[in-house]
Amino acid sequence: MESPQGPRRGRTAALVAGAAGLGVVAGVCTGYVVQADRAPTKLPSLSQPVVRRAEGTVEPLPAAYDRRVKTDGDLRKLLLKRPRGARATDFGSGDGWMDLADYASTFDKPDVALADELKSEFRRVARTGWRIGGTYDVQIQLAQYHQVSAPAAAEHVKNQRYWAGREPDTGSSPIPGTGDGMVYVHRSPKTESGYLPEYSAEAVASRGDIFMDIWITDTRPVPKDRIMELAKRQVAQL
Image (tube, rainbow, N blue to C red):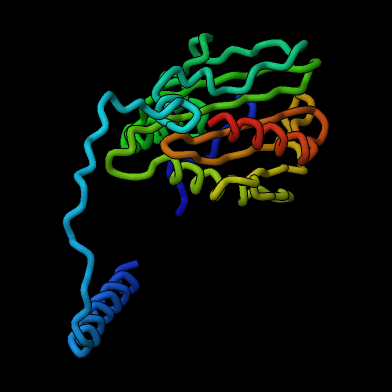
């Protein structure tokens, strides 16, 4: 389904359960019939020693096994670290957070995106970016949603995949270890008078209530291995 907010900008089973249930009931009934026809046998006493309840408190799951510990904390800590030698690029507040207005402005139709994000139960966005050399830019955004009424993060992946797939001369590959993650390499550059041609590649995926969105732009074609490596590393952080 086409998303009304437009694409992101570049740089700027009941029947089975029922059958199983019937099978269990039939098996139990058959067992009673067979047992009724057999001679009585001496069975062990049903009375068993009482097992005492363990004392003490139950330890909570460590963060390594409980995703909510990580994702409900400081979302910025889940972002990839800027490589050594790269320069930070700030957008929005500059402290790693983006407010809703700034996030909506990254879409082709900011006003429509703003309304759509509110409808999607927007919670927050953590963002990082860096530049290597004079033209190689990376942007990573983690958008989180309350997801009370719908799986908004997965829907945003679906929408962005729709727009990315419409771009001409674009190659795509799934991100290993994700159910919906994809990388897209746009082989034809965007051109604008007075500016160098801009090549781009992007990656999208969802993990629970988080929508991951990565962009790489450069004046030269972006290799697929480069965007894939970034995407796999960022997904592993979530």
